Length: 172
Figure (cartoon, rainbow, N blue to C red):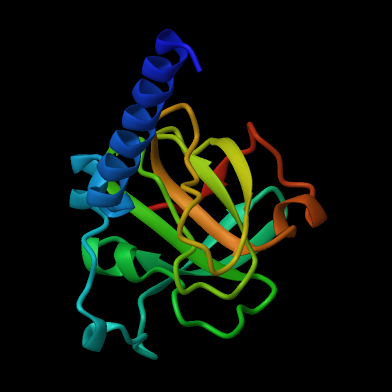
């Protein structure tokens, strides 16, 4: 083996080991932006419980009325639909933020397949995504700022003819 190839091999090994050490020392949660952490503080495990008296509101999209739980505090947004076993057909959860921004969502400890609609400050749906249950790697967010997000059973928006550009009525 020539000296030049030997040095290239050593250089490549150093780069691979360096990249491995960098990512090993920085868990995924540390890579998440500060605004994400402020919007979704991680709750302590004992606090993870859903109260039967969750605040519910009625929303209307086209001719569909839906009853949704309101997640309008950092604690409620962090808990979301975690640890739920099911979700009624015309029920969901509305995440309302204090200011417009891009807030990533994930499906940690969420076994229900969900669809999410992102809603701008004019109450118009700007994006709809399908989310994979029980995974922590993928972060779901649109490319534009939003003020609210509506999670429903997976496929609910498609089954009910709800599309990007439709208006959601009743958002507080």
